[in-house]
Length: 271
Image (tube, rainbow, N blue to C red; front, side, top):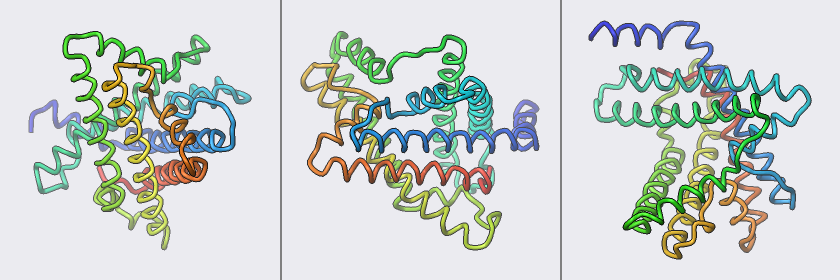
């Protein structure tokens, strides 16, 4: 193990980094609880952008929102950096090197997403505004469609999103996420609750991201970037289907479950 790797490992396992990282995962849970609340509002005819950026914007609109947003941003930065450190040197307790590599790639992806969300929160505190998530997705899709073989590229993106959605849902249904947890760190009987919340939460996220993949594929087939969108567009699409309100409430409960799961995960995650 080189000196740089040793230093990274020491940083990743140090108490201050562990504390800020675990607190940050709690902040990530708060974001998902806000997404659940916004999804429930859509189910009952309310407004608001029901994705992670919309959740951050909702927090900003609360009393003392700017203070709350700075706190959330700091926590998310800490969580994102913690995940990137884990991607570099973590999961050494896994004996299977291929499995360890997959987990490191997974947490690296989450770290990047979380840091992007933290950047958005900081942008809101500084400028007081941000762009729509759906508009950003549509602009990116339009640029891809304008390239040679653009529809094929967008289809490829859709396939990647669908595969990712399937992996997320499978991770919940198969309880694979339990490999990263040490449930003995939790109070008696709490572990079973955390397990159930994780199963429901991961499946709900997988289903929602699967809809995003389908919308992206439709945009490629129709060459219409307005058909695509992020989580907010996916949830509004669900709401427009038969029994859409019931489906959306189920998804909202799933995101709430994942948000609560994050609190348990923060307490007992093995790194």
